[in-house]
Length: 68
Image (cartoon, rainbow, N blue to C red; front, side, top):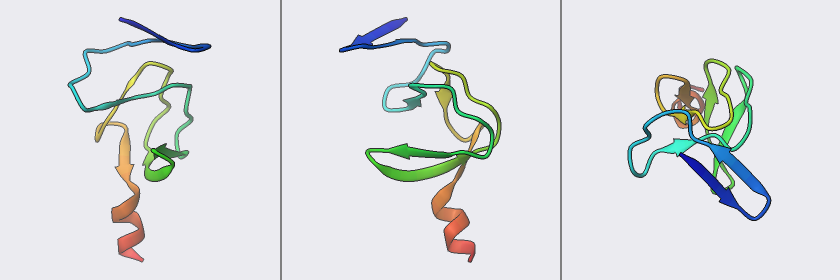
């Protein structure tokens, strides 16, 4: 599947369930991920543009902050 919005083009690399997230750009392991401007997680592996973002490659930022 390919998505276009203004000047952004993303080729979706996986079957992504409705309501789930995908990456608009390459993200390196250990980087913060934002949704609607809020930090939601820290990547546990490199993520490519169009990849599904979920618990298999993201740990919760909320849980990390709550531990401290």
